Image (cartoon, rainbow, N blue to C red; front, side, top):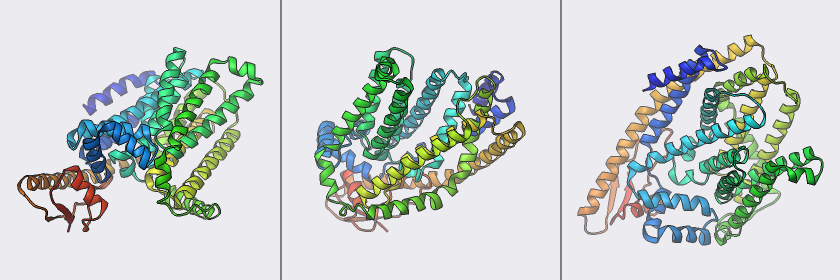
Length: 478
């Protein structure tokens, strides 16, 4: 099947901006990435909080589950609703959950493809279908490897709806917003996406709202006056969808559960939050970014090649220096707002999953800068050839390494997990009284989120495993 996919991409490459050789090699690297992700989806397993939410929706239903979360824990009504629907349908039947991260993966690629296509039409850029497909998968691969914690972001089921799906909804919302189709349909579907965005993550929604506001101000300055601004149908779409996002965000913020959960955090300190923000900046620049530069080299280079191909048909309106300066200032401003907000609310730098928005912003920034470098002719043909094939060589080697490295780790972990669950459910059918069952520790899970429990029956992971399978006994790990 992989060979046939390569042949198809090779055939279409004759009509594309890339040479046949480069298209074939890039396709091979991206197919390896998709294979890696598909393999990890197959070996992903339920873990920790998944079990609690399964038990909750099993006993209380979807509506009560969403309402209780809204009133007693957090206002993420949209993310909680989607999560509870999935848990209600699948319960603890693991086979169905394998599709959840993979469907999310496909939706993200499709959304990026649609957004790129619609944006190209509006900017009068002629990008072929194959080129857009390859760039969409390249961007997704870049986002994947830029993630702070791949396991927590891409393979922990209860985390997907609040963070990854927030990005997916944002991308699809923009795709509908910039489409040139039926105005009412575009507004409807874009609004539905941004209702989800506003009701899935408070920090993400705030950053999206800031980006929206900047774009609206930019459009208003282009129009020069309010009458000209409001007469443009895209601007009217922007205002409607922005209002929908704002309403959804307000519904999120007024949730009583937000204030109850806030009492669990230490006291908020305005000045001390700047110190935590500084720690976040050091963490980002010293511990995060350097180890991910190689993935930017691998998966952002196709955007340079795409930009170079389009430079032959249209000329840039803004110089590379100006574009780079504005994009960098925007990225730095958004990151500072994010770091400070998380520091003030949580009185810490925040868990890895909430940093996924940092990965998304950096992936967008890297792709846009690389595209504009190619578009403005910053690199000559010789340098681009070195970048192209150097990136492909690195990409091929790293993808093969990850597959070879992750397959034995993920497969052994999944097998041990399944044996543990089979043993516990069998004991649950035979034991008639409460006791403590000691199980062997699970092996390391690699890029997957681990379902390991602790040596203490009172630990939340142990309690949640017991709830998920309605165990009559307590379980601990050796």
